[in-house]
Length: 306
Ligand SMILES: Cc1ncc(COP(=O)(O)O)c(C=O)c1O
Image 1 (tube, protein in one colour):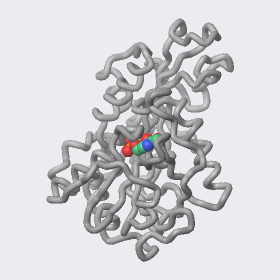
Image 2 (cartoon, rainbow, N blue to C red):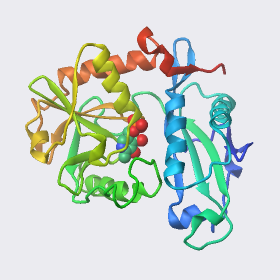
Image 3 (cartoon, rainbow, N blue to C red):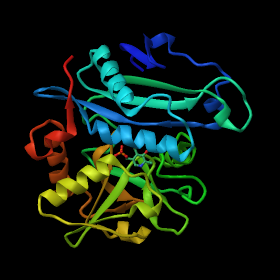
């Protein structure tokens, strides 16, 4: 990790190297943390944070789902994110706000501990993400089932979700794939380990509904809005594994992945084995939106002056 700038910890900017926690921090033992992943893009008009209010809202909703009392309000967190990015002097970066139960008691009940909040950012260039972004990812349907929302709130972006996602990711990588796709406990397609998923079949774009137990992805929402603004239609419907195999195109969306083409699933070639026409068009539209070149979505960018 490139150590740049400072990390905001409980309202203080501390040098990157000194942003440390105690080994008995509650979240380290019980995964009692919620977090966000946000991007700041280097646009022709300067650095801009993508869909900041939506990320801040989700951050607070995630905390609420876990009865975690955020010690700052949304405006304070928003300002802190902007301040951290400005302080980093990075023109483009990935931003990671995290709220977690800190050091204090180490029993299972988290709520007796103080909630600590930190915000860090680090360099992450556009287009620079996991294998397969522009060439097409090779995915595996994971043998690990996505945690059921009846077991824990999967709409929360919580650290505890990522043990499950990590198992799927590692399994896929060990077997030579780029990414995992997880089924829910009904055997329906849920999502990737850190992405939502879409298919194109007979000119229809379909994505699993939020009730499939998936994260309410902000990139998912952005892509849906872009398609709808362009006169297209999105169908939210449960998908079976075989729907993916016979799809004309498959793509994934996420803050890190942006719009990523999937060209192989379980060694079955999707479409003609190359990133599809609609996926490529969406990648292009998404770049235009994040670069502030599409006036219709300009409100999604929070320009900051470095
Ligand atoms: C499990 C999971 N699904 C979907 C997404 C995509 O969400 P977003 O587009 O808000 O980054 C992510 C990434 O945050 C994720 O971790």
